[in-house]
Amino acid sequence: MTEQITILLAEDEIALGTIIKESLESRGFLVLYAENGIVALDIYQTKKPNILVLDVMMPKKDGFSLAREIRVEDKTTPIIFLTSKSQTKDVLEGFSQGGNDYLKKPFSMEELIVRINSLLDRIRLTKTNQFITIGNYGFNHIKQELIFNNETTRLTHREAELLFHLAEKRNDLLDRSLILKKIWGDDDFFNTRSMDVFISKLRKKLKKDENIKILNIRGFGYKLICKD
Image (cartoon, rainbow, N blue to C red; front, side, top):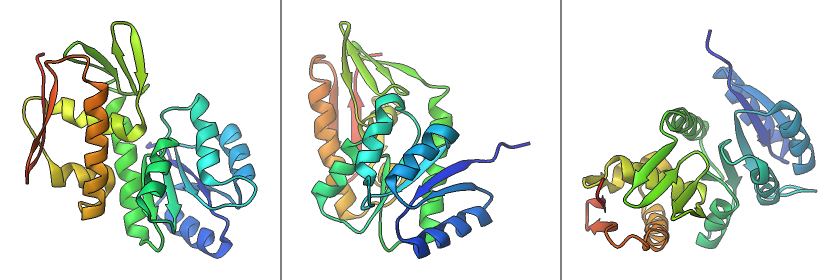
């Protein structure tokens, strides 16, 4: 029997929260609903759900603060932020607080469900691919860590996911549109710019091995060049 997936949903708009909860339950998920961040943290600590869907703007404790507290101890449970904010700085703030994905209101339930399933699939995949060697670096996908000469560098969730897919396709082309849809959920201009920022961050974190390069194949994607 397949284990039922448990989702913690934190949303202070009760009408919207009810709609989301009922829609997810109709797809077979078990949904634990919280109307604010304080209640959500308590549910998380006692129930340990498989995935978190957190509204950013909530009373008592906002979604970013909640995620930050959870990430102190839990580096792997997927987090999707729901928000009406759409500025680049807001999106990047969400990722820096440990978010795996970011869905702007209004959104379709189909889109939310696709993103939930995508994150769960990636977690299943990483459990069988925890440690990867990239040139002179060690990369722990689960812990989101780069190790070079016993020095450990922490990665954000989005950086770790992007590096994982680059490493899987090392010395070969990683298709831009495909990876945008897989990690960001859409290959629009805004997400493309966001991915370029993360590529730049990864280049800086891999610069201690001069044989590692991330090439921009203009119009097609990226290629991680390194020796096995």
